[in-house]
Amino acid sequence: MNREEMSARIAAGHGFIAALDQSGGSTPKALRAYGIADSEWNGDDEMFALIHEMRSRIIRSPAFSGSKVVGAILFEKTMNGSVDGTPVPAALIAKGVVPFLKIDRGLEDEVDGAQLMKPIPELGDLLERAKALGVFGTKERSVINSANVSGIAGVVRQQFELAAQVLSHGMMPILEPEYSIKAADRAEGEAILREEILHGLDALPAGEQVMLKLSLPVTANFYRALVEHPKVLKVVALSGGYSRDEACAALERNDGMIASFSRALLDGLRASMSETEFDAELGEAIDAIDRASTMKTAPSASSAP
Image (cartoon, rainbow, N blue to C red; front, top):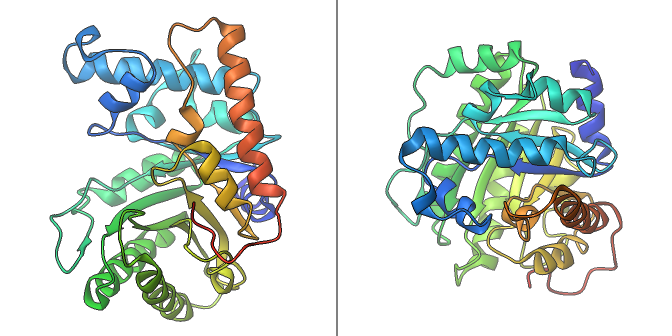
């Protein structure tokens, strides 16, 4: 696939984007869920080797293919690794899966109800290396914890500033201003977030597009204006702590949004499984998330579980 073909594949949305981008802070939890205890590894090198093998097992599985998985988000170490001797981005492209790279380096302390991204050193070099490996775009996450106008505006402003840098390198940014599903004022905050994003989109130069990765909204189809905006290639949803069943049920009620799930995709996979068991469990998860992404139901008043 060339870049134009990748863009068309994401825009069509015939499937979902797998989030395989757990980083240093979230990797131990992901390994525990996979059935690997903390006592089974020693130090970051062993930890990352184990998570890379888990991701490689997913990528090489016949259940993981471009027929239902249109994209995958990678951690930098995964991008730099290989699957059976093939660089990971190339292995994904060979299966019809568009590769993205998580570029954020974690979160600052909360200010005004939000957590901005930490600085990203040597971003230009990282983007050029990723592009040379065939990576199509990036993903960058910040977090909103309350309906504070100043905090939300700051998050969105930083997201678009970083997006401009990504676009300048000829790559597609996925802006991820995650709204915590634990926030009591989420409906109010999502209204502020939607308006701030619309302002940012309207300010983009002619001919440029971005992607958005958003928490599943309290009200079904609340982000329709973003889904239909000409400067948005695709809106994808994060599972945000919901179970797979909860996330899929909510996603089905949001037209035009496809999944970009992590934990909801990996739940049920265990290191001890045989290849047959592993492929069957992964296939079941992929089928469920694909259905929620592509086969929509009539929305109820509420989208969130």
